[in-house]
Length: 341
Image (cartoon, rainbow, N blue to C red):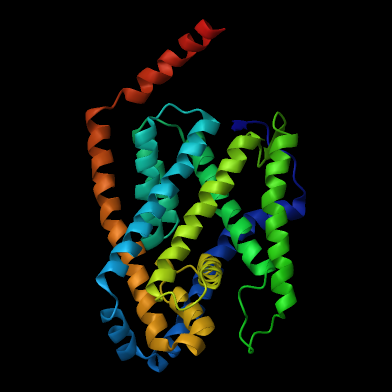
């Protein structure tokens, strides 16, 4: 849990770098995104778009329905991330409302970027529910940590096991990827150990005190996140016609996801396609791979966005008709605490 505290002193060098970073990032991040987008567009004419469309039309209806079901369950599991945050910070927003805010934000996040979905939309909906900015920041932080802790555990295990094979043109030897995988697993498991050993200790981060989750909640973070990533891999596994082992399909998806994080393009447009084509087109053919990726975008990105919009409108309408829910609960909380004491 984060609480206000006097800011820690910083060195002049760190202070100057911190002050200059917003100006550097303003130009560096868009420039990097344009560079990646340019590289992707330069290869667009080499892609077998006709074969991709033919592969997409060949997808059996039952496979599409099952993949859509897994995608829906994945989005529902993601909603539990904010429930974990709710338990940690002990805010008073109803569980169903907390879950709905997370699911709606996730759909917007995937399609419009983290600043819109992961931050701005969450901030608005939680503010409408009566939470202050500090509490919202804590919930968002727990959600982000949950997502990447499970990613580190699952992806690290796959990378360490050598499931994913880098192309021969890669400049990184295979042992480096294995070593990175081992490090990712150790960091994820180390988080649980730290939470168990220093659960009652407060840490200072950017002038605020950070209270770690209890060990049970830390384990829940890993399990829910790993389950969510596993479901995402299952969607792609089905859409690729089960032609690759599930572990390899999941490893490629996770590699594409981390590349998309460092590419500031909404929905990672083109990045997912490029990684899959680079790693799998030699084995399955461009048409098959790209057709599966296009189906994945439709089932995991676009259709859930429709549900996200519906949830957003529902939440806005509920907030307008129940403006005092959280305020009343917050006012009753001190009395309840005194009664228990």
